Image (cartoon, rainbow, N blue to C red):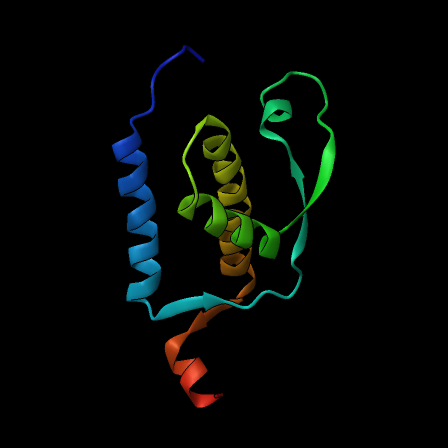
Length: 111
């Protein structure tokens, strides 16, 4: 595929649209049944050779991302925060596929 730029504002709009849809359907959480997952570091993901798998954890992703967003911004923090965001986006996709999205109504019935 030819080189081209991807517009950040379009990515933000598309991402916000997905989360707006979930919230519009009453989804306000994710049931995490398994927090650990396999991931490939982004540097390996864009190489032609086979990647090295590493174990990630969505709670580590969430905690690190919270700290990085609230901390000082620099180039290292930026790529690291986006790496953690990818793990969190993956758990949303996994939960959507497996029926693990939590809806307000369901949560209100089971305090």
